[in-house]
Image (cartoon, rainbow, N blue to C red):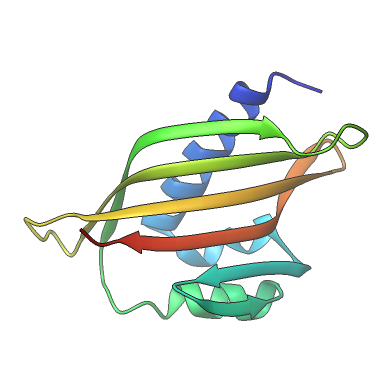
Length: 124
């Protein structure tokens, strides 16, 4: 398996850059078996996940990653868990929101896709 931190870093950079500029472009990262838990709502499949992400009620968003951690998730498959924390700046608000997100990435054809995605805002 490639260096886990390198794979996780490349994935995180791509995911949040795409989310911040073209949420519909995230479709290539999900499959019909993928699941998103978004603030407690369970969403299954590429189409439903992309519909959820593109319908979020803001015009502009910027993710600022604070921490990222990655671990292998299987001894037999080159899969990994990626945990991210950071800040969301929504519609140029002066008060960023804290978030945490966990991805379970599975290998497919020399790349990875998101099998599980868990997103939560962190309220103090």
